[in-house]
Image (cartoon, rainbow, N blue to C red; front, side, top):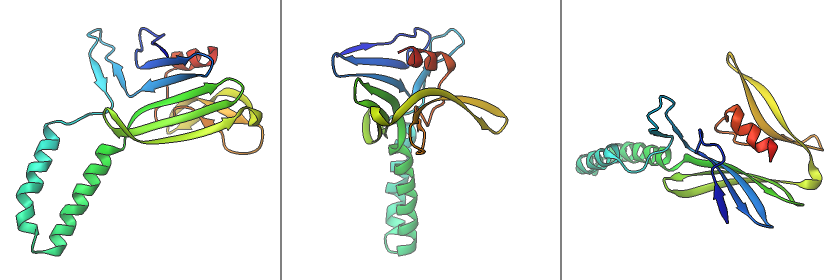
Length: 176
């Protein structure tokens, strides 16, 4: 397995080549600051001070809510919403190309660095008409995205549905 980062200005784009099996084009959820400092901005976060404060708050509030079912239910619902938000962060999105078989779109969600949920969509080569760069409108913005056009009237297979990729990443994918 060979890992390369072909775009020096965008190291979040990763190509994983498994000879004779597949090639994966992965975009991880982080980027480099464009001010020249080369600092990393993470789209996800692991354990931090806020998590510790939330746990201390729950530990302090639990004795006050224990005898009252409504208070305990509200505390539990708040904690469940917080945990859901923390454990469903998008870690990476990828397109896997299997020569002679088709394309697979993948989105990994979880708590960094562990993927807890992975959603996959496979498009067989026989049902694939073409791979296109499409455009869509979002408010006052025109966004371009990479999509697989099926032969039948079914839905487009959209690559990187959560994060709309910059143009140079799409060019690298199309060239491959």
